[in-house]
Image 1: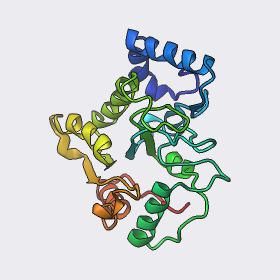
Image 2: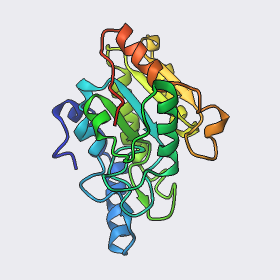
Image 3: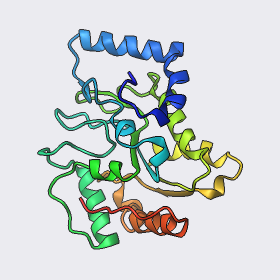
Length: 227
């Protein structure tokens, strides 16, 4: 499961994936796929976020809920889609806010791997989903793994930014806030960019410029958000 994961993540993942809960998750996923269910993203891409963004390079964490559940959309990076796939509505709204915040033109494609390679960890709470069934793999065991990843970032001494869109992502912030010295990190919270909630405060929240200002102030360099 972690063959392609950077060495800096291994101390975080190895204890978690050896637990009975993780083994149950793996067995259940195999059963679902053997039963003919379409599970996204495909095997081999479910830890893509960790592959592209080593722990020691993380500057920003953007947390999503679970992967896109349409064919061809999910590829292991939260909110991102592969080249050639039309950006879904939430990603369109992210690009609208990016245009308003930074003056960048809205891109026609939605592959965010360029962000990931700059240190933006694009992580979902749940790392798989059944086709057409949003939230179908919640509470199946992924939270233990993704909680460990988030806490590994939060426990580092270097200041980082956590961009938390929606209630599911913000629930993880409670653990970050409980850390002693948690004020070394910046937590940016807003409603989810989904069309159902974006107008409740996601638009105008300026997460991109706020994140870059914090990183610059702490000597960590800015992220080039241009797609």
